[in-house]
Length: 390
Image (cartoon, rainbow, N blue to C red; front, side, top):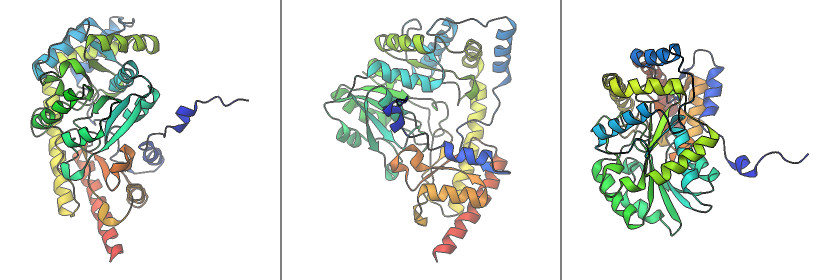
C-alpha cells in the first residue's frame, strides 16, 4: 500500500508541550504549571448568555464571518481600547479560537517561498502554520538581555527580498515579555521601509501589568498592513468556548473568510452570543482576574529571588520564564527530573524554539495555594541540584 501521509506533515514535530501533560495525567498528586489556561470559571453573566441562547433555540449557523452583533462589539472594543476604527461588515472575521485566525491569515497571504519572520521563543503554532501555508519560516532568536523584546536591529538583519510577513507575538507566550510603544515605533520604521505585513497576535492584550497594551496597528501607517488577532480564551476565561477573531484590511479578511467558509463554515453560535455579553459587560471581570494574576506574578518573582533563580520580570500574559543555565542541564532534562522527583510539571523553554534552551515556562494561571506548594518543591529541587554540583 502506498504511504497515505504527506511528507510535509510528517516533518512537522508535534507540540513540545504535550509530552509533560501526558505524563502528568497518569501521575497521582502531580502539580501542573504548564497549561496556559485560566483557572477561573467563565464569569456567570457570560455563561448565562450562552445558556439563554440555547434556551431560545439559537442553534443555527451564523454568517460565515460571524454574528453581526458580535462583530459590532469587536469594533467597539477596539475603538475604546486602541482607538482603532474598523468596518464590522468588511474588516472582521470571527474564528474558532485565535489559532484558526493565525492559520487562515497565513494561508490567505502567503505564496510558496514567501518568508515569514517569527521571533522566538513564541507560541508553538506559528512555524507549523507557516509551513502548511507554503511559506518559509525565518526564526529571529530573541535575547534574554533584551527581555525577549524584538529590536529594530534584529528585525532589519533578518529581512530579505523574499520577506513578506512578520509575526508579532506580544504580550508573549512563553516569556511574558511585552513591547512598549517606543519599541513598536522603532520596528514600525523598519516594517514600512521594507513594505512588510504584520500578523499581530494580541490574545493576551488585556493581561498587562506595567502599562496598558498598545497595538502596533494603532501606530501611523500600520493599520493597513496589520492583521490583528485576538480572542476570548485568556481575558474572559473562555478557553473551551473556542472563539477568536481577526481584524484587518478588507482584501485580506475577505480571503480569510473564503478559507474559513470552506473549512469551518462558522464559529460556534452559542459561543458568539456569550462573547457579545463578554465585550459589553465583562470589563470588571477582566480587571478582577488581571489583579489576581498580577498578585501571583509578584509572588513568583519574589520566590525566584529568594531561591536565587534568575528571571527577568515579565509584564504580560500569565507566564514566567526563569533561567536554569546554572545547573548545566538542558531544559528538557531539568523539566523531566523536576517532574519525576518533585511531581511538578513545567514546560522546557525549547518547546517554544531553540533559543528557549536554558529556560522554563511556568504558568501562573493557577491558584496562589498551588503556586506556593509548587515553589516549595522547586526550592527543594534547586537546592538539591546545587548540592550535586559541589
